[in-house]
Length: 229
Figure (cartoon, rainbow, N blue to C red):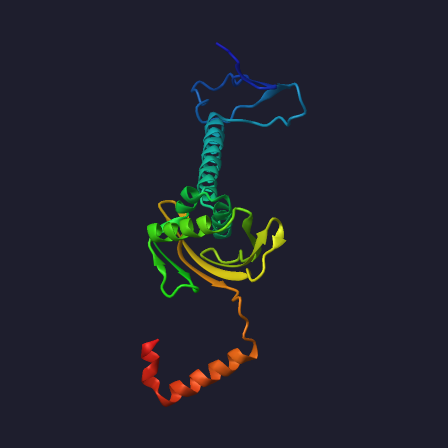
């Protein structure tokens, strides 16, 4: 008995007739590449297909789809971790809004924060938030941090230069520079160390060089004094 095999694909009709040889008595269709008589609705090229090639092509499409999905998942995971520079920007914006609950989430539990105006650093998230609470309560909300420049090359260490604005105008003696080190903790970037150096109101100028030279000479004569600092 003769029959033909038809496979319908989107936009394409493939028809496969059986072998017409009258001298063959053993079926060989299982391993034979079937000739293709195509009726096409587009300009696709007619090619010979075998059942094995159809399965292989389907597997390849499945693997390709899985690979693309995996790549998208990995890419999405990477995008969830903000860059260090953006975390530092958010830190200053949170201070400007007086939103200390938001700022708290950007600071690591064991963070160390040095403001060189003070004699000792603030250690731990709670101590740092308490400091910024006193700071924001001591100044007007019209006084805002403005970032002048920020480093973006290093993924873990960020340098910032900034100044304060009063209603959009530079506030006197308010320039500063800060350094921050960040780490990925609990799936997000957090500040683990910070240091602020603020412009002094009194500017000694060259007299500062005289002081440094005098202190250096004193330490050379009495090295043990260095342990007192």
